[in-house]
Amino acid sequence: MRQNRLPSRTESSTTTPFFRSLHDEIDRVFDRFSSGLPMSARDLWGRAEDAVMPALDVAETEKEVVITAEVPGVAEQDLDVSITDDVLTIKGEKSSDHEEREENYHLVERRYGRFSRSVSLGFAPDDGKVQASFRDGVLTLKIAKPEGAVTKTRKVSIGKG
Image (cartoon, rainbow, N blue to C red):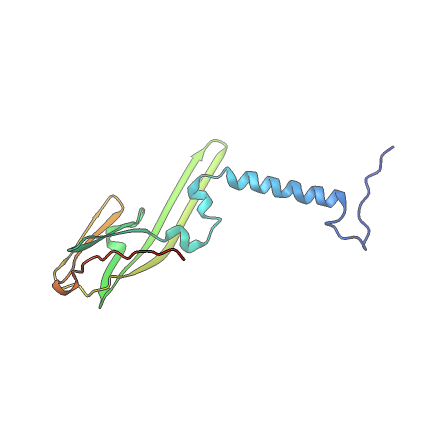
């Protein structure tokens, strides 16, 4: 007849085979659970600000800077775009509710959060030289560079070190 040996008070729970095995199995269950979550639900396990922080793309030409911010779930009236000196700031508030009901199933997901992203432009744009548009959750800003800010690109050679 086989007996399961439980740890005594002097033994560490991580050194006994029973608790080590139990601990490993719990880790596997949580790993399987979290890896099977859809991306939107996986965000809930991360930092709260990451779930609402917009992704930015910045492109620069000789004459302008184009910034694209992905802000799905944010209404246009909940966006605030400002430029102070040479710093562009995009602020907003995201809120979304999702609910599904079926006979044996009820899911409710809610996300709320404020965000603020700032980008140094390297120049202060002239008044009236910033165009902003918003469509399908994407904010696009076209910022014309002032005359003095138009720079030339110089190639820098990299030596062997």
